Image 1 (spheres, rainbow, N blue to C red):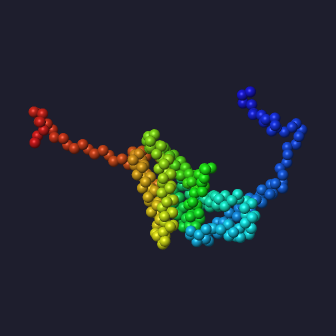
Image 2: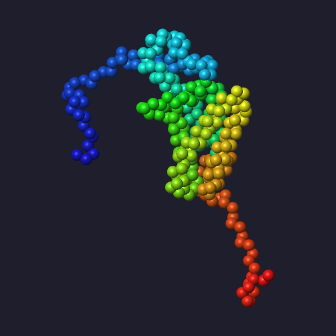
Image 3: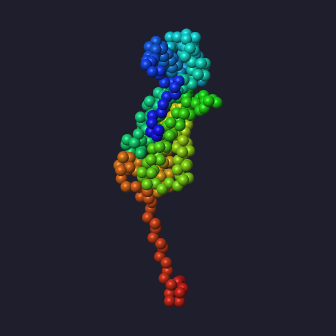
Length: 276
């Protein structure tokens, strides 16, 4: 009957009068113990990575020793070294996201938003260069993209959603091609920021300092966004709170210059010819 609740298969439905099996408390405690031990190993791995010289291998024995475990016990929680490395990457990326994603909000002006995201990323990278190097290696295999690619997708996807919504609310006239190209442009923009920071971390003297780098990258992102917005006839005020912009009238065409007055044309004389 239409609207009726779906019925469980007979094999899945409990028999009449039969109590629902209780959860195994011992199994729950064991699962919690495994999760705690795995967290212990990952935290130890991060500590060892941060202490390791650039280019040096991070031995599993050092991770096990820092975690207070033997290699044998450590590998009870990971299939092999590749599985351990992938888990460490995911753990580091999650730590970065815990700081970065709260910055991806509509609070403040457009300039504030860009600066907040870029400055947060640059500051984290400057404080944890070894962790940044660790997540640079994409371990993705036949099963799918690695955690770094997935992480970039998350950030780029959120930025893309912000840009798309803002352009629509601001009254930008987007063609099908404009909408389609927003995706690769946004992912390219995020990739450019990551590449700039990666190169900066690799420089021997790491100049300019982190504050100047963040300011310069912020300016570059702004120039790109502002240029594309102007091409769509949308004027963006870098310092105006975004909430005010979104609550105001559409901005499409507000920064377009007035068309120039046509030049004075000589008035033809009575014979139909312009005077010399």
